[in-house]
Length: 578
Ligand SMILES: Cc1cc2nc3c(=O)[nH]c(=O)nc-3n(C[C@H](O)[C@H](O)[C@H](O)COP(=O)(O)OP(=O)(O)OC[C@H]3O[C@@H](n4cnc5c(N)ncnc54)[C@H](O)[C@@H]3O)c2cc1C
Image (cartoon, rainbow, N blue to C red):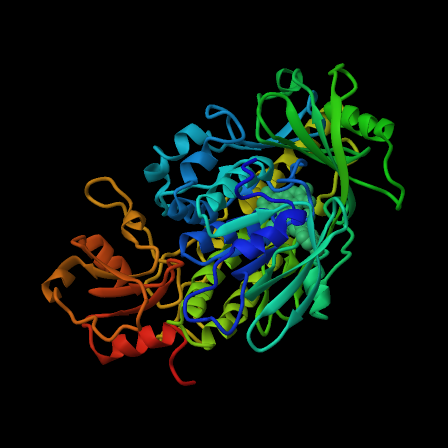
């Protein structure tokens, strides 16, 4: 770890003294623009994104480094688009399973016995080159990527460390906060020696996970449904990381990324972490007792099948609870915001907890930049909750539907019998699982269909938006929607033409209006212009001109740059009078 940037809390006082005051703010002393509490994937991504935007950050995490126990293992197409924007998509894609490892989802009675169903999915080495083949279903340059949080977090930390103004402090627990009109002061306690320091910033973001200190200091609670009980994915669970290099060879039907086992003894989800024998198994627990290593070992053997003897070693274990679909009652209070699990808690079916958190951070980062640099208005701060809370409710609801679809599967008595009746039972359960596999894992609508039509930043158009469904994404040029993706004639992605600030696209024949007057933009507001002579893009967006926000959502579309454009830009910057 690079000490220039990852400093324990006890060194923080010297660091504070070394920080220069910000220009024009001599009367008010800030240690940084934004404090990020929590260095999980959401806090790290937010720190990197703010760093890229020239916003200074102090991040505090109470662990000693990035996570060591795998949890999230699915990176959505939208998350990968954000990583592409930060220039780290290729590096994230090179992590986790080897490039030639299939990312199938397979369902079994037990791994060495009967395969019930299998959803075939491409290897990561094919994902970039084959993105065009999947265009109908996944219109994006970045297909989903299966890779554990274990490997993603170090890439995010490295991305954050590219910016001198971003500093990450481990072994540092934020324990209290004070907010006033001008900023937020956090008290940070070193978990190594108990020493206390204070850090002051203009804004503070709680990315500190489900048991969020920030959320509880704000006096906020989750609302929604918790504690749902199901046969599987509804109740207390154990997640055990283990090594079994011989397991892949014993699996019926060849290796996969996820292996679900269903039999009358137990149900489990086993995920291949590195393709070389590192796996994580999730099993449902009965009662409150912590499972012993012996219990967990037996549960692994049961999932594999006791007809084979596969040696394995336990690495680490944790417990968690499935059955939540929770959203914080508020995602902002004054200068304090919540993002990621602190703001919403999922059952991990559909792989959406961390991915929703990455979208929160992408939504918030450019707004913080505009507020810190002074080119955005106060409505921007309000818009974060207005835009993201409905998405958190939408996504937790989708995840709950997937949990129901797998968690309530009824198993016929004869499921494992070597008889005609057993075969028929496996065929019928397999038919449901084939259907379920598509339902949970082929979800371009969930991943790409987020829209902010009701946002205070968006001039909503008349007419109906495309339906918001999980398994089908219908691109739309309506303000508030994610910018539709197009492959350009030279084979490149339209997304690579977008700037890191606002982007004005001149599409198709839109070039004929070159020279439109963009004078009068608020000082410091980054707007780049791109002429894209593609009629396909013009048709898809439905206008000659399109204004994109920094998070790649559409702010406005129209056929001329006129007063309406000015009003839309002003509204997107939170400057319009309500
Ligand atoms: C079994 C399982 C599988 C999952 N699979 C997926 C998946 O495939 N895809 C997906 O999208 N999601 C998945 N999730 C969910 C995903 O792991 C979480 O949504 C994600 O980790 C949330 O990220 P975060 O950064 O918001 O919070 P966290 O990862 O919880 O990070 C919070 C950080 O804050 C630190 N912290 C806490 N309190 C303080 C404090 N007071 N001061 C300083 N630091 C503090 C913590 O140590 C931690 O490092 C899964 C979860 C589980 C349990």
